[in-house]
Each structure stands twice: as structure tokens, then as C-alpha cells.
Amino acid sequence: MPGDQTFGTPNGVSVVIAAFDALPDLDTQLDALAKQDYAGSFEVVVSDNQASSELRKHVENHPLRERLQLRWVDAGQVAGTSHARNVGSRAADFDFIAYCDQDDAVHPGWLTAMTDTARDHGLVGGLLERDTLNDPVIAQWRALPPADKLPVLAHFLPITFGANMGIWRKVFDEIGGWDDNYPTAAGDVDICWRGQLAGHSLGYNPKALVAYRYRTTRRGMFDQARGYNIAEARVAKQYSAHGARGTNPLILFGYLGWLLFRLPVLPWNWPAGRRGQWYWVAGAVTGRVEGSIKIRWIYL
Image (cartoon, rainbow, N blue to C red; front, side, top):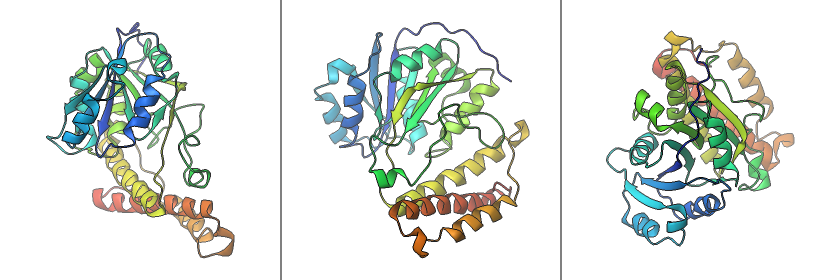
């Protein structure tokens, strides 16, 4: 297993935001970044996967441009969040890179917590919370990982989410950055695992807190869960030689029993919160089954 290393204090932070149809939500994130209590220097790089002239003008004329050292870069050559994060990272001026998403909102202590933990780790993850940006009913639809530690996928290694991640630039360069073959989902799993397999530890600081925005329709939640789990099955198989494992097929019957008992047509499941939960789990189960069939490897 990777051991801790000493990296020291970064000379500053480059915050990279992968953007696509980013307006108007991006301004919420930029406002949040302007409230950081971080004492060092940082910049914000909006890496535009759409190469939008509208977004470019918006960034170039933004009232927070000087405060955030804000700039726009063209990442429209290859579709996908991973490519946009690569382009933004390679344009970075500082030696530590932090990633957040266009539609979320970092808490004021985010960069301070990230850089504190980065002293001893090649990669850093933080905590997501669901209450700030979501309607209380929608916030019930999906559980987030517990606050005490990072999640572990495929019985293998811990991961953090691309919406709340940090990496040293030299580690990014060493492992080759994000894999463009994971354009939307599981790219964060892949880069976390590659970094750890290369000998760099993944640190965690729950004070690196991000308000995470949910999809606002049940169909949107279903599609997101399905996509996540298809990609998760694929990345788990990719790393199976290193120890990633599929789960016991019998677990599928537990999922199906849960879904049957919680069918939205049953009276006790009529509340909107329970209906949303059902769609999220149904999407996850569908994605795992579909992913297992596609890759011919059981991941249930």
C-alpha cells in the first residue's frame, strides 16, 4: 500500500473548474471561491469543454476576475469532463491543483483544509454536503458517503469525487492526468487509484467541505445513477488485476427486494422523498446490471 510522503506547503493553488453549459450556476461557485479564508495565492481556471464565446466573455468581464485571478481556457477539442480537467490542469500556474464543479459551492475553509492535508499526501479528498443547495425533499433522494472517511469502491482502494479533489501538479504529471476514456463518470475513481498505485497516498480532510447540487428530477437522478454505475463496473474490471473485485451476485436479490418493497405505486411510498430514493437505487441497480453485461464481468 502507498505510504505517506512529505510534500510541504504549496506555492499556491490552481482551482480548475470543468465547464459545459455553465451559466448561470457557475456564478454561485465563483462567489463561494471569493469567500475562501485561504491565506495563500490562488487562481481559478475555467476550462470550457464547449469552447463557448458566451462563457469566455462572461469570464473575461466578470466582476471577480481580479480577485480570483480568473481566466478561461479552451477545452473544446475532446468531449468530456476528464479532458477539460486535463486542459485546465496543464494551464495551471501553481504547484497544487484543486477541482470543484461548476454547479456546486465550496465552503469558506475549503482551500485551507485542502492545502493543510496536501502537505503529507499526493492527492486529497474532502466531504460533500447536500443541504445548502438542494430543496429538503430532493436532499432525501440520495445518501452521500459518511463524514468519517473516504468511500472504498470494489473492495479495493479509497476514492474521492472530482467535485472535491486536490492533486499536486507533479503527481498529476507523473501519472498522466485524467483518462479521457472516462469522459463523464469514473474518471475520479481511475485517477485516485492510479495515484495510489504509483505510491502516492490519498489524504482526507472533512473540513474541505463542498455543497453538492443534486439533479432536480427523478428521471435525472435515475440517469445519473445508471451512468455512474456503468462506469464504475468498467473501472473495477480494469483494476481487477490489482485487487478490485466485483460483488456477490446474491446481493442483487437484496437490491431487488428493496426496490419491490419501495415501489412508488404502494401507498406507504407516496411521499416525494421516498419516490426519489427509489429512482436513485433503481438507476444504480440498472447501471450495475447493464455494466456487468457490457464488460462481461459481474459487478453487482
